[in-house]
Image (cartoon, rainbow, N blue to C red; front, side, top):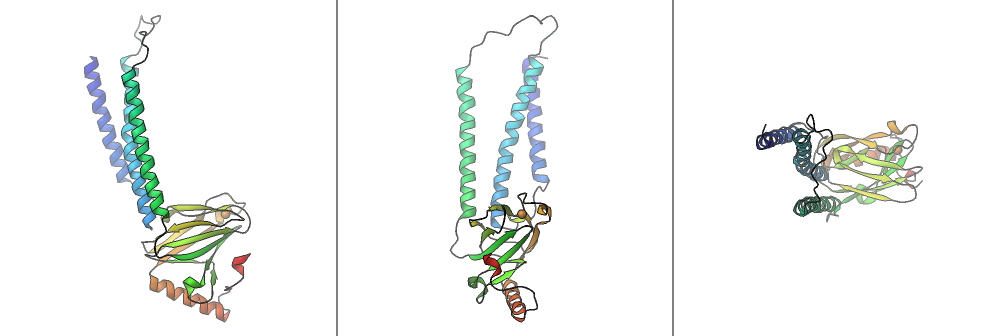
Length: 258
Ligand SMILES: [Cu+2]
């Protein structure tokens, strides 16, 4: 096979491989539900990264396979040496400049996404999260309840409102992760870390501890309920009246400060 013909063949194979891989990357839903604006931004970034990576991966593999095939040793050439080539400045400038531009583009875009995800909006509610081997508890301050602070084992958030979670640990390092929100942050004893998300999709989603924190780590799970603002306030009221009557087994004060 002439080298021109095999080069054409390799190019066609590469284009077909790129098309198939791109189709698969869009066809399969790789992620959990997109329950926050942060999830939308993160997934878009991920798709851009995949779209940029597929052609580069295919190009590299195609060049390797083409070279292995085209420049392989033929019978009788066992003792031959390769041609004495010393560098190719134009090629080296090319393969340094293009990855540099690509990397700067990806870094810039990732930076913008992260900054937008963490940007403090004009209006936002605060919810405290306390981690303890092996359970999560949640604190709703007076600014949220409109009355006494509420301490609960349940996490409810209103749809369409930005929530800032303040994370504290009573013992070891945990990580507060809601896969459907796409954000996670370490919960470190002695300091308060923060985490922000704007839920945009009603439903219940898993809350996961994502740092090995002891024997019960795999059981350290909870659920976040994204509800309408009206349902959220109704839930707060019901919890407060349950706490006031002592029926709910939930204390309104004290437990959050340990
Ligand atoms: Cu944990």
